[in-house]
Amino acid sequence: MSGVDLVIIFGPAAVGKMTVGHALCERTGFKLFHNHAIIEPMLEIFPFGSPPFGRLVAEFRRRVIEEAAASDLPGLVFTFVWDLDDADETAVIASYLEIAESHGGHGRLVELYTEQSERLARNSTPFRLERKASKRDLEFSQANLLEMDAGYTLNTGGPRTKAEDLIERYDHVRIDNTHLTAQQTAERVVEAFGRP
Image (cartoon, rainbow, N blue to C red; front, top):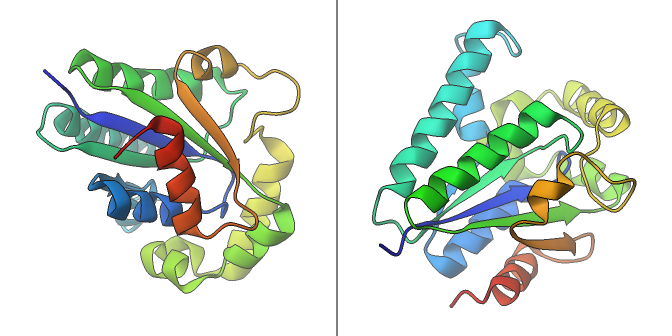
């Protein structure tokens, strides 16, 4: 069984995870499962952070990854804002990687980082707003970005985080995409992982 590659792209808000994921899928034939593909429809029913919202988002994510891992897809790209010092979030990411491996696939981690000023500019790009209705309130979305930056550890490179034992067990590439297009970033991912 050759299995399905699961590529998890992580990094702070508006770093370009979905856009790079889209470009990577165009390059590889993988399918994109961006974080807001589940969040947006659930927000139409339940408030963000409410227990039903949390349970449903978690269940749908897991089920999509399980079905993809058992399928004949060439690969799945999943995007996620991962607090690297949150043990629960790290356990969730570990479980997704284990799902891929249990079906003979491989887990790979792509970390994106860029300057906050660039991310604030990217926060209002048309592609982002088209795919993520909850980001169209730009004042709220910008405040949320700043709060997440202040309150969470969203990239490696500083003091060692709780997630790094997990990260070091997998193929991991860390890319500063401040001055790269999504296509250039995707190409670096392909080069790093040796994908055709």
